[in-house]
Image 1 (cartoon, rainbow, N blue to C red):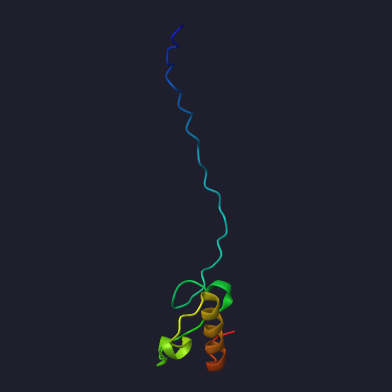
Image 2: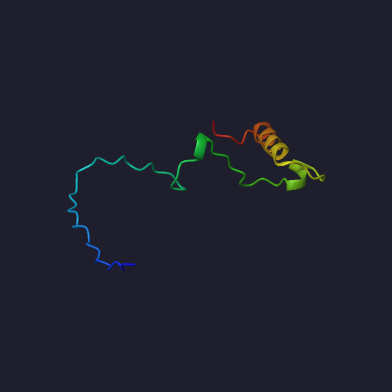
Length: 81
């Protein structure tokens, strides 16, 4: 059997990069820096309710948790939307 010799690999020529002037969107000025995903901003600051007050003492499924959180947010008018 014939043994093939390894040939050295050639490096690709370096690409020249040119800077294009692109207009960037101005950043929104908010306290947290990022806009809330989905457009909702809910603030639980200053709330004295415990997790047991919101969800109850029995174990529940994640889907039920979501329903109870939204019921709580809507009943206390915590949403900015």
